[in-house]
Image 1 (cartoon, rainbow, N blue to C red):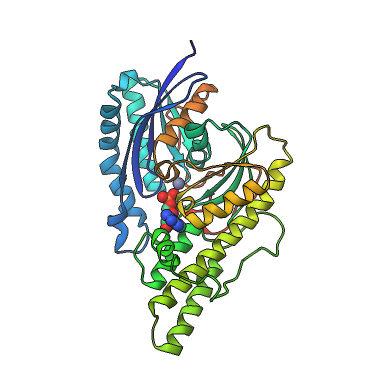
Image 2 (image 1 turned 60 degrees about the vertical axis):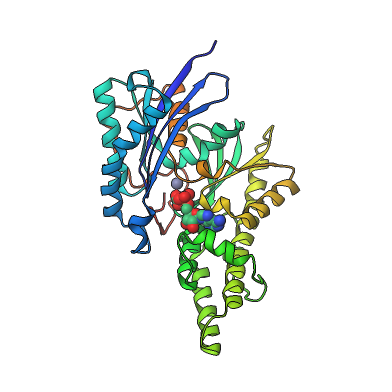
Length: 365
Ligand code: KG4
Ligand code: ZN
């Protein structure tokens, strides 16, 4: 019988306060015993983006309630937990600090070990929590705060093959929704609008496809959309429903084409590693987009690579992914102590050059 580990995870790096308990016996399928998420969407709605000070205060108010609920739902006491994992970065520093301070308090009070987890590692390891995917696999992390291709070779071994040099696609969807008068979060509303649109009417650019490699850029797209919208408004005095649907469809098709072509390139680099069970995994809110998901599924199938996407609740920010990443680190013998610091930037791949730009979580990791 293998060793059983039960880990409490805390997440507070952006606009979701979360706590979860994950348990795994060596060699067996991990179980999510509880996963509690308090979103902050309404708190930031009137500002059109995440306000760091408001986020930090809301995290500080909610994090202990989250922990209490996560333990209650798992029917466990702190004494039953083997270690406390917490997002220690990258993210909005006030929020990350709330989580780290709470985890330190819990660790000091209970004597349980503390494990600092990189938020991006949490996303990147989720396909192992949900589908027990074998290393190495290719991960496309695509959300409101991140966009990068990662070669995941081990719980602490990540190679970044490329990423956005400016906006993340989720941010671009959110800004596009604002420009088209659609509700936030922009991704789902632009996607719903695009269903009735003609993706070919407006020919938006496919940025950086003329450049080698897997880096991407999405900030120019929203400028192109703004220009196209203003031109229609200037000609007709306003946007018809069809104009709006066509703009949404054209924008979504541009994002999809860039992500699909860059996935094709990332696959070449990945397959050179000779993986035994080649797999592409996606995570992040934008992975919910059906057109984008279908495009990546198709390019994976064309290359004989399996495609997997965790359920949406585990694709977006949550603490089960942090508990699980903590569990993998703990099993490797990793422990932190009271010197653990909250880090606004924390690249997963220390060898890769820093990315420019700043996402909804602050500076790009
Ligand atoms: O992963 P997530 O919940 O939070 C972080 O950004 O970390 O992702 C949220 C982002 C938002 O920008 C939202 O507009 C986008 O994911 N999103 C979508 C869709 N659903 C959510 N983008 C495109 N299509 C969707 N269906
Ligand atoms: Zn995230």
